[in-house]
Image (cartoon, rainbow, N blue to C red; front, side, top):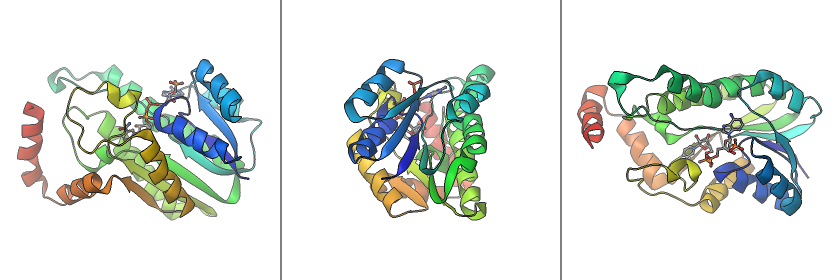
Length: 238
Ligand SMILES: NC(=O)c1ccc[n+]([C@@H]2O[C@H](COP(=O)([O-])OP(=O)(O)OC[C@H]3O[C@@H](n4cnc5c(N)ncnc54)[C@H](OP(=O)(O)O)[C@@H]3O)[C@@H](O)[C@H]2O)c1
């Protein structure tokens, strides 16, 4: 039985992972803000719950102080907001997205790494939007590019802890329910949980899915920016 902590456990991918691991009798600590969903997870699958805001450093310290001996930490919580008009750049939106997607990861690493067992595993959920500069994703894409950079650096520098970086394509969750554009090759939460849990089991350094989408983006990434630019402008025009 492993001791697992998951952030963003009240919805979408994180909720799916929480149910998956708790049903296998692992000891799971589920983190989120939605107390009602956390209570349901506690009664349905026996996950211990921590309700707090990850953008508040004191709340992170307070809620993690009694935790120790972690085998697996999944930093999955995140938020997505788009910059609809880059000529009216919204600095507050940019700050909100950076805060939950990047800064909170730094505070979680600071507080949680000393609480992980030697030989433990750290899984960080980024996004395939980190691969390319995509229109409207000036905040979200930049935040995920930063997260991927942090995870890759930790893969090279952390001693005694394996790092698994996750680059999902589109997954059907409340985060993507709001999207008003086509989402090619979108997968269900169950499929996402399957890809992620298998990659975690293999201790993969990177998990990306679905490959028919992420490999295409990885290929596009190889284009020189001068070739990518006209394509990005076309996507921006819609
Ligand atoms: N869905 C996709 O297509 C997709 C694709 C690529 C990457 N991702 C990434 O995958 C991760 C999970 O996404 P999802 O689609 O499952 O999103 P989701 O359904 O919207 O869930 C987001 C989770 O993050 C938590 N969260 C957000 N802000 C928080 C805060 N300030 N403090 C504490 N918890 C907070 C939410 O908890 P509460 O609601 O309880 O506050 C919720 O549990 C995110 O990092 C996202 O960027 C998703």
